[in-house]
Length: 290
Image 1 (tube, rainbow, N blue to C red):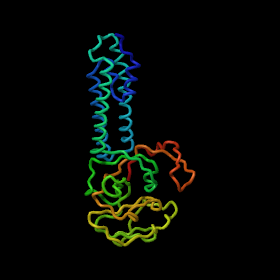
Image 2 (tube, rainbow, N blue to C red; image 1 turned 180 degrees about the horizontal axis):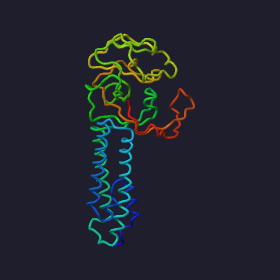
Image 3 (cartoon, rainbow, N blue to C red; image 1 turned 45 degrees about the vertical axis):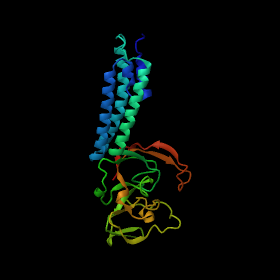
């Protein structure tokens, strides 16, 4: 039997996205330990991200640590194969066993991803400019699912909610009005219970939406069990001024972090459907959404 080739052990890990290379190199136990450790680190990082008020540096360290771990077990497979080159072949070092374990790891990774997405945090791509400049077009954000509770909603929170009941598209906007409050917008200025709202995140960039007076609204009282949400970019956001107040039952989670962002070139400033991806916005990666 030919000894395991170190380069092939590393390549197997790259292709499979799981520690198959360690099995090929004759160390099944090491492979399983590496997989469990990777899942533990990923879950721990996800919980830390949605639980603690981390600095941008710490956030980047966590993201970098997850990526470095992937690289580390690829390198580890190379050295394990080289170390075990003269060792007797194990009974499981057969091609069909590698395929079977790849399927097992893939299934386990899929179940782990679904569990994290459902109970800890979920990644979203934001396809609009309604929350710019807080969240830009095509930003990737992490949404807190671990502590998702509509009872915790406060004014100014950036939340994700269903647009029209279960299985409807998800929107991300800022909470402005709470249950029982009277809300009114007069000439772009928001009033809550007849008092002017401190609204530092609001901008008015873009043309008036045809057929709608988006600079004035109400006065209306927000029903119990509902909240009123606005996009930070008031001229580009179809928010509660259009769709009405949002039931708390449609709340999905809090938007916490931007984990990826890139610039886009627009041939028409008013049309983002033909946006051409540009350079990565490194200065936005790891920013906490506030």
